[in-house]
Length: 364
Ligand SMILES: *[C@@H]1O[C@H](CO)[C@@H](O)[C@H](O)[C@H]1NC(C)=O
Ligand SMILES: *[C@@H]1O[C@H](CO)[C@@H](O)[C@H](O)[C@H]1NC(C)=O
Image 1 (cartoon, rainbow, N blue to C red):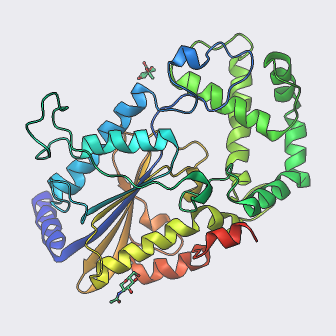
Image 2 (cartoon, rainbow, N blue to C red):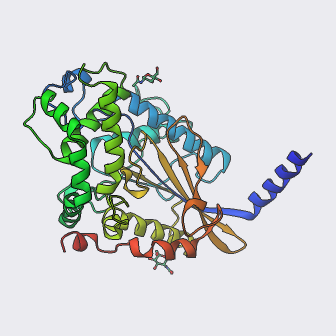
């Protein structure tokens, strides 16, 4: 009885609430390692695709993710139309092949049960509609500003300063065994830089995700220590709190400031009626927005704008990977104490992280 009652209440509430806009961002699916080491038994030829590109498994992950998002926003909420319209859906992708291949796979899933356009072309893939995506060349891309790109010297400078701190250097020194093992086995020139740990971790984690047999020198102990070191350092070098330093607001803004501005503009446009967009996609976001050292493949954040009694609220949802349900995490944000958070509160909270001219800030 209680269950029925709460169901009725939910339905009533849902009717009073009005979804105005959805913005999703995600990590790419399973890909090949970006860099590798000289003695790596698994090279590009082994994987069959060049370094950093999406694997078949990664395409499948995003195809599934697209179907899940379709169920949420097309089938269940009846918010996005089943048939693609550029006035409703807008797709940003970074210019990395793994990001654009991820979004193409995802959209194939999102629009898979749609009235396909076109029809009647011989050999056209069944159930597939080409969805336009928007990309900007790396060197001009401040939306998906990425730490390793040359577009943001200021970020690199701040990152180098972090890596030079006493606490961080002590941490590297304490991990001397890792450097010794890597230097003895990689076949690469000897290195004691954090980047050699970082590179080895990203190669091995992917090869493990692909269920490949590890070389003998990659013992369980070595892997556990490397994984722990990566977990401790990865968010820190992107600006998160750690090693005696607080979160670096400027590093956060340099990575995410333009995307946050875009989100707020899209919400504003949905509220004031200047925009008809309902579903905006960002493919190629790395871990920086939430600072997740080990964000899983196809992990996805959805940011929704709701209207209730003339007031505007945002709601954040997250799913770790395609096997995990979406769950709200809005109340985890310091500025929100409910799963619907007043838009004005969120805006005030992120104000210091919003950038209007990142190119200028990056080159300051
Ligand atoms: C690796 O093995 C696990 C467990 O059997 C399986 O779920 C997963 O799909 C495999 N990964 C790949 C890339 O084949
Ligand atoms: C509506 O919001 C957009 C995005 O912030 C802004 O550019 C535009 O000027 C606003 N239009 C009106 C009529 O307020």
